[in-house]
Image 1 (cartoon, rainbow, N blue to C red):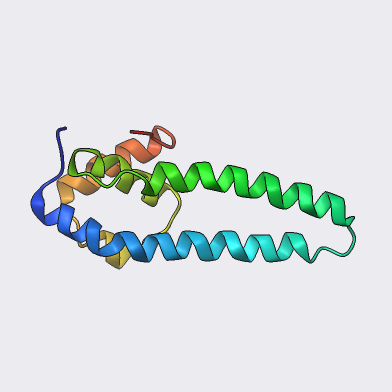
Image 2 (cartoon, one colour):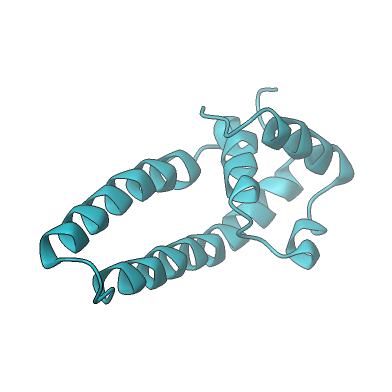
Length: 112
């Protein structure tokens, strides 16, 4: 598909920042848990934080670095695969777009 319908493109642009904030909140909460784990050495906590940030930075890039209409369906599938939108927010998209997102999400974490 060359892109998504204009309506869905506008919805994605509206919800992109919401999803990004949720992603970052999730990562920062996990970092807090890792960094405050008293039963683990400071060095191990540092290594765990570093590993988490590397993994999550790759995920963040796949979900949010592409801001073009031609790659929007892939971006939406990534956002959906991370569970960053509520059912109510997803229902703002057309049924055809949601069906395509569901297929892509089931194939794994798509990358554009």
